[in-house]
Length: 89
Ligand SMILES: [Zn+2]
Image (cartoon, rainbow, N blue to C red):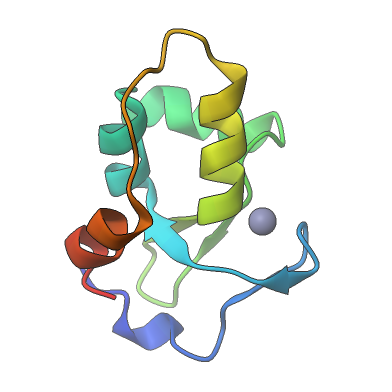
């Protein structure tokens, strides 16, 4: 997983702020959803996403949190420190 080429390009136009970005693969893991479900959330605009030059789909951490808060079924506690570690940030 290569997120190195995204450094300095962390602005989320949806949030209007600099955000932490995670690959859709990691987002799926933390939300306990399939990558297809993540793609649907992205398409519906619930999750903010963009692609790296390498073609990796990244999602904005804030939108990940908001998506999680909207789902009562998602009880997995997400620690930002853990996420950063997993994402190699
Ligand atoms: Zn965002």
